[in-house]
Length: 97
Image 1: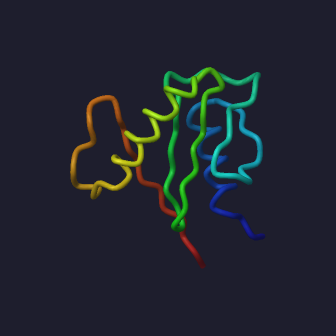
Image 2: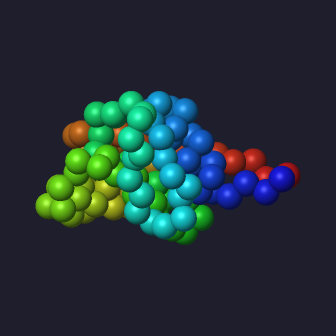
């Protein structure tokens, strides 16, 4: 069974935040109706040389621009450097056999 990074990210976010997501086939996706509404408006992931942005549907265009800037700054920091206030980070590993 082949599982893509995007599918693993989707499973992780749905389980951790009790939200519903469509299949991640683009870099930007929005939460589907029917799940929990998390406190965050953007969940950004860097994986396999690519970025995925998961948005709460109520994030306005101006909020999205500002949040993307902050998220990309945080993603570019080494994991040993503290992120700015209001940003949390986590690392997930996938074992390849």
